[in-house]
Length: 580
Image 1 (spheres, rainbow, N blue to C red):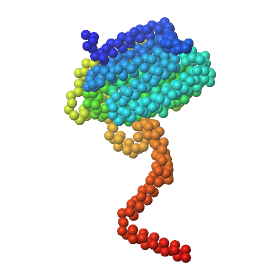
Image 2 (cartoon, rainbow, N blue to C red; image 1 turned 90 degrees about the vertical axis):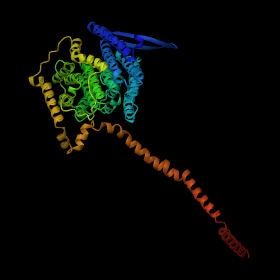
Image 3 (cartoon, rainbow, N blue to C red; image 1 turned 45 degrees about the vertical axis):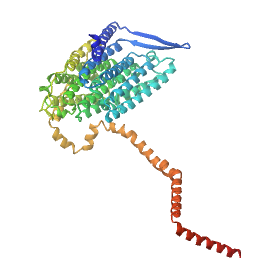
Image 4 (spheres, rainbow, N blue to C red; image 1 turned 135 degrees about the horizontal axis):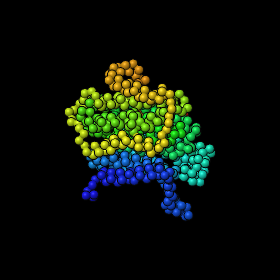
């Protein structure tokens, strides 16, 4: 009976139904080139109308459909994953609030309502990151919240600049006013906001730290909600970016982010952090292709990436759940014999991430790399694209090696299996989408096939780089002990590459250390130094010494009395002699 259903199943039914409806409308609007712009007057105060605007076009509807589908499967999966949690209802309500904030952001053509969704994501993400309530979670939550506040301030300033146009509906002004000073400033501010939300350099430190949240939350955050909000915002502002100065800066920064994340993931042993760094690398790829003006291609990769990234996190959650909360990939070893279905799903998601032909990632990544080969980008950007692709396959090969081969390395004798119905359903749905989703999206978004003619070297470059990366990944996994010994010869270089170029240190301790040391020195010399010794504490010490001396004098009665008598008698005689 319906009233006896858990909140997870009710949420799953509601969200999946809404997802199917949005998908139907989105594809219909796409085929008919149709768009709905709604203005709803919420209230009128003293003749001033407060209007809520909603933009329903194929882009917002298909993205909403994907977010709702992934969140429904994640919530269904969470019923078993979070079964030991007494507050699971609170957890599901937080996830639903998170999804609703993303919905508000997606359908808003207005900067005010975008800010409501944007801030809602930031606030609820903080609540979810600190969910396990330990020191590590609190630190990660604070880092996440404060990094995102920079983007919130940039959006507030963009709202202030929108006052120049008399309306906050930015969609009206992107084409007509793109050369004006005001729109130029808004473009810079929106790029800054998107960089903080999508964790581009120098705001990358918060994304791996946010892994402190429960794994179902990570599956949702890293696939279709929090980190993709910045990319989606820039897709909406793409007419403003084409050929502008912010786009050129963004291209370089996102290319370096892509390279830095791919490099760091090859030195990481934490399963969730490897997948988090792969998200960062893919976000860099989306931002980079977006800065070249190819917003539709960035949107295509955003959707395809969401499918297999959510599956990756779900499989990682199932493995961690079975390994009694161990996240170290060196403890995995030959999981395929114990958890064949989970490892099969993990391998499908990994191959989709690498761009294996005819999986979801292939259609978008291969198209992106071929268009980069045709474009007039600099050698540096060209190298960053292809080297980062090789690094992606490298850390994926390393992960597949640890999960498929070797001997079991888990220290205890805990039995591991796939017998988990809810997790099984959640992963199955996303695995089907990871296999067929890319081709379906490709047919919808690009109904006319693109003819790309390249020399044989450039045409096969992506495949060559991928094969070379996979070979290096397998070799690195097999000879990890000898490589560790060799790496001790260059500890600084290895630490630099494996720690995201010192970014977590620079933007946490690095930001606070100098001001804290300065304030401590000023406090020690000022408030607790000279002002104390010449003020309250100094007077206190003087009076204390004087009173102690007086006390000592008063406690030695007879000798003091005799000495005092002699002293006063002598003084009296001397006084009388002077008078005479």
